[in-house]
Length: 406
Image 1 (cartoon, one colour):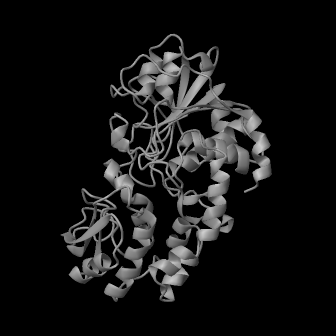
Image 2 (image 1 turned 180 degrees about the vertical axis):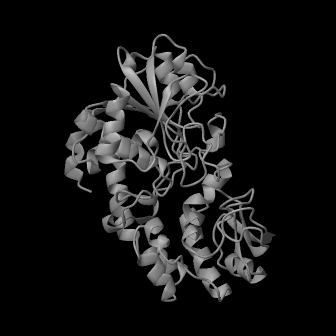
Image 3 (image 1 turned 60 degrees about the horizontal axis):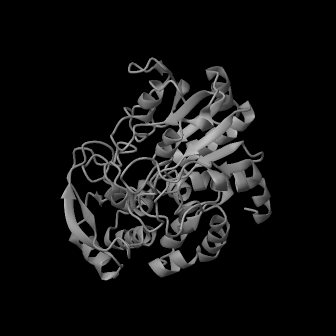
């Protein structure tokens, strides 16, 4: 990351739209403000939207349906990410290319496409402007922010404008936490050196990507929210929650996800196949000793309950496993990444069968081999979390220049 590249932000503007659309609620999303302004940003353009089921109004209508019937917008294409535009695919899947039954619009698949192949999709669609509107959950390894990055890069290659409609970070934007990705570990769960819990909105991330990481910035405009505060959790927004993916059913899932998703890199269940994914963790052979050890760690804002569950799919499908359920008692004090590290440390001590996935997926999730090798060497929670503080401080300094809200 190079602070000197902030001059590139001259090509990225925040659209000057009315401060308060005619709704009585206090917070207004980027889409609400775009609509209230009569879609002036999209005037005369063939428009394509990158979105999924979370791209809705506060009245729960999808923005594609709203825009499709509005004569002020020339909506000509939809682009679906992982899980698909209508959200019917599980993790690691997409809906492919089809015509949307509700609107007749062509839906193009962006999943696992980047660079020139994705630019070719934008070119083939005939759009002039690509609009992005997807609800993020605040974690570096949640793939929608890298769909954003890939689409920005591809739009630049294809000579398209790019507009980002902002939505709240559901777990607040107070601060960045956790390890920063090392470039040699870049994958679709982390393309660039961003903190594990980034504490940014998608519009802020787009500005960061344009100013720090894209070789050539895309013509970018961001439509910011009005009325959002960095300290606000999702329930303060007044917006309906739509699961951004099948295993993100509630805002409470998002609250723990940036820490407990690290268990995807282990041989323990991360709760997929249950009604509380990422809040339930466990394995065959684990018992109440893990919950006891985790509670003894004295982590702020959280307690751990001895729990038993039977996943209906994924790890330990159809088998009863033991482990913990996470109960956040004070979300303002809760640190999900530190909690995730403490759970890894205590699980390794409480269960002799503890192991990492054979492909070292944990390294991709955490952004380097450091977490895995330190825990294997017997390091405690303070030692592991202390090891990334210098890199995190550097990221926080760069991040500060791209924030849009107080």
